[in-house]
Image (cartoon, rainbow, N blue to C red; front, side, top):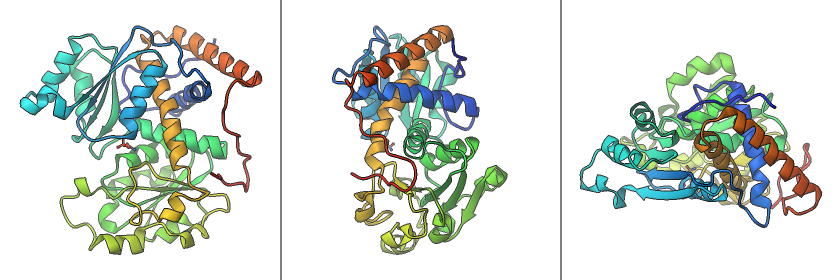
Length: 352
Ligand code: CP
């Protein structure tokens, strides 16, 4: 039996995870990725379990992929958004959560504009809580799917140079990625307008983080370029003169790619502001892994739901993970998957 290295009840952030826990989540997601490449994309792993998606902010990718993930694991998935819940009548977040808990869900996935909302629910309730993005704090499953995508195309995380460009201040994606990538041995360069790069990251310099003012300096020699969305909804002040100005100085343009490694890949968590933080020819170009990130989001969320909503029985988890791995390998050997070609590591860049 393999050693189980993820025994937490909740997934609230990347910051508190050990490197081994992150690697275990990624390995489990890799096994689940094969299920989504089968003709019949369903396994009975969470049959009889109930997953509630509680979203207080808009979402396309995260909410949909949690729902698809739950259904591919045979769980019952219930989606609740603020406009259709009693919060629109004045009920508090905690009362809403208490009422949902009274219906005995096996897991609650929560997205909220308030940093710390999932932690609050985890403290007061019984159900496992998964943070699907809390304010500008953390978005752990996004960082995990980004890491899974990097591992898929680069074969490793350790030793890579990753440039993270843009609105770091308001970005939960940047925070979770910075914690994850530095824990797994990547070096990370962040760049953006001074007003959008927080001083708090200075403490991570010893762990392999550098803060650059110019986008060109962060991208120099980068293996991975992650572009962040300008988060207009979280900006309560003028952090830069205009979108046009931002696009000129901090938008990713084809000329920037000449400075990166020859096989550099480009990522964006979505939703994109085309022509602002990223030029369309890059977003749709051969180096872009933006849609691969979305694909891997389902596998990561299957893994997280499986480990957290599966009843918390570590030994069962280990056995079942092994079974899934063997079944997926057998299907691949038999040629029953329609998985995409694994790209060679080296100079070959993604080509879609
Ligand atoms: N990346 C991400 O969280 O996208 P959504 O807001 O669409 O979920």
